[in-house]
Image (tube, rainbow, N blue to C red; front, side, top):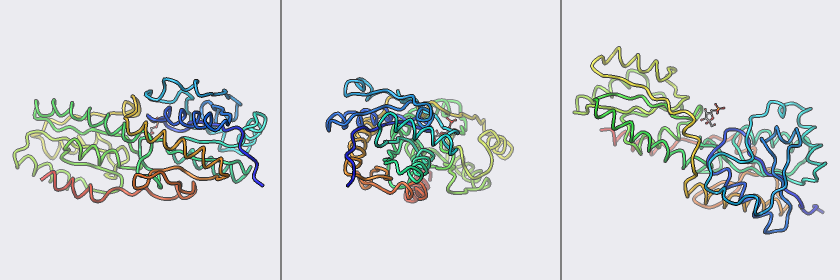
Length: 328
Ligand code: F6P
């Protein structure tokens, strides 16, 4: 018979995302509700390897639901990729009598959790936390909604300068492998063009489209570019290319960078984090493991971690069509 879970470890790993604190809070309070002990693991797998743990109770997580980042801190651990690192982590978890882990993070975090489970049979549940929204098995990862709102706000501001000076702006947003942020903020902020890793627009088409916009009476333009876009040129090279082919345009570049990852989580992310944390703990209590808690058709649902890692979060084709029509 399965042993009752008495102590759960919670950690955040990989790039931080708004809503991670809210998810930790939810895991801790759900544990308290069910009278399970909860331990915070600092800096993700790094803290696991070093035994950097802290006991958490319902009051330890007060006042954090509205805070960006993660108070448990985060890291991308190279040591955990080694057998020796994982052995140390296992020994520390055992010594602290931790029976299961809730890992909040992205692809890399879940891959680590899977390997660990395979080697040591350690129960793990994943909660997707990354602004990129690039995880299969959930329509929204934690932090994504907040990042969209942050970026739209900034693009609105840049638009003021673009239109005052009749300029063309290339704005680089995060998403090294996924264009979800770029596509959504592009539509939300009324960008003239959106370049994403999933579709290769081609440089000629870009210039043609910008020329058409100018001929149709537009005096300024915004082009949103995802970090990992497929043109093979970064925003500065894109600027040079357009300068060369459209010398009449005054072109500027704005790389938004890490400001997209910070800030107070949106209400949506706080609520999602709260729902996900409850489900993660309750599933562990039922003896489940190797699952990721996600949001599918607005319902909390689980996906096997392996599928979450291997599956592809498809770009919304309807949104591409909407964007094409909106830029007429
Ligand atoms: O995965 C989230 C993300 O913000 C990506 O969009 C970005 O490419 C990457 O992290 C940046 O990572 P770092 O903070 O390690 O530079």
